[in-house]
Length: 368
Image (cartoon, rainbow, N blue to C red; front, top):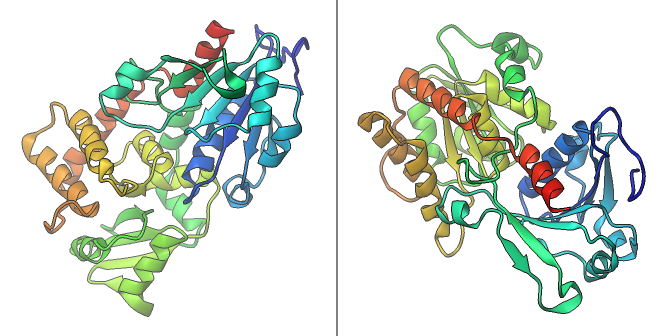
């Protein structure tokens, strides 16, 4: 493991940095999913990463092979760790262990301390990205924490996108991928993936999908359980037939999104990956008790649909609003060819923004 003063070049122009990335798993595995992607992307670029996590169990199926450049560390062990990396990332405001912060404060030079925030398209993200937060209380007194916001515009930290991702996804052939999992798409059948939280709108959506030949691929967990509850043992409705999927490692999940004609995704990680897949997608946003998710959903739609055909844009808004329990309208799918073309154009625009890990490395290097 590379530590301060060591010479870890590994073919790169600059010595590799040691990154301490902290993650608390709240629920639904989205936080560990994002952190694992960031950690492995850093490692693939020659960096050294320690991922401190309070519950690493999901990595057994999310990343069964692990990564030689990422060391998964138990959260409790951070209290005794005296060697601090050049960069410390506090993911999603998880609050670092106080003893670790004491070691950070005593380290010379002090590490670059970054608070990696949640993803949002709201306007405050552009204003807040990269701002410093001087620490005035506790063991961190005198230190600086930096706010780093992922986002969709050039004024943000960008999105996770490892080198070669788009080319890899575009090269996945749908029929062989399905066949490898014992599935065959019938003539004229669209393929739809379903990854969602518990959702009362699911029966109406299935009814809408059943109006055309559809192979519905339900991911393991909440999606499969709800589909089974609605469709029963037949796992069919009208022209729709459903197939459950097992838990998938992240690369296979990305491929799933690439082979589908429509992806219904949830949370943050799969939301971003659906956009890189370049297929029509519907977002099931994580609901917040104070209703803040409605503003967050609207902010993304406002950005995503700038310049879109009014009829198509209205269809997407209505569908997303209904799916997220914010409208009582019956869901209707927009015109498929237009929707796909618009999503591909959106993806092309996102590619112009430097990816999150590239920006993280640059940000940390400038502040060391």
